[in-house]
Amino acid sequence: MALNSAGNLTPPDVTPSTMVSQSASSAPNPNAPDAGATYRVWDETHAQSWVGANDNGQASFTFSTSFFSPQDKSVWQAAGSPPVDVVAGAPSTASLSASGFPDVTGLPTDPQALFRTLESGAYGPANNASAAFSAVGELLQDPKDTSPALRSALYQAAALIPGTEALGTIANQAGQQGQGIGLTQDGVRSELIVDPSSGQLLGTEDVALDPSDASEALIQSARVVPAGTVVSWWSVVDSGIVASVSSTPASSNQSTS
Image (cartoon, rainbow, N blue to C red; front, side, top):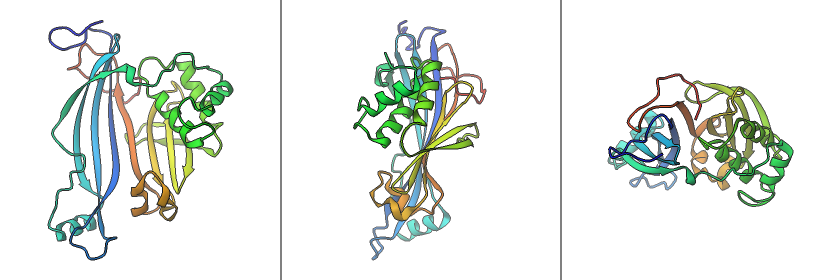
């Protein structure tokens, strides 16, 4: 498979996925005498990516920013309406290679053996629950090489990580329902949402459960939002086989990437 002169991947082996992600952030009010006074914003990214049989492809991104609440907008206005587009910018396009995904070659499909691999430090610090849990999410995102058997094993291995909990049937931010599994650290619960019929990852969420415990959390915005707020998330909206990188699949509200 090769790119043709128009920059499109030769059909039919182009697998696109459309994802949307959002995260909360806080920006300081430069005019406030209280250093703790901030206004909070949502940063949202819409991404479409295509990966061909030759592992080459393309990704396009659009960005937007909105306020967490009307009160945050008022604080921002009182500060003189400074720029708030933390990640917002002009739409962009980038080349994409499936080589950027973690290598799944040789990973066992036995959940216990796979759990031992995750715990060994192959994808981060050894015997680190957070690193192992993050690795499961990353490995489930591979659009081409993660087989159904490996996806099933990854989900079962995630349940073996110390501290994880089954969340039952939950929906991602696109409304797709799947089985959830979570891991709570520093007052923030990280969640994976998986399609039980295919093992496909439908999305992730990070939920601020206890902002007072979030001082050491990597997700610093968890400290400035009410308990129960989803401070970051991404969802796979749709995927399928199309003819070129200028095409998108007919909407099916399913994740098959």
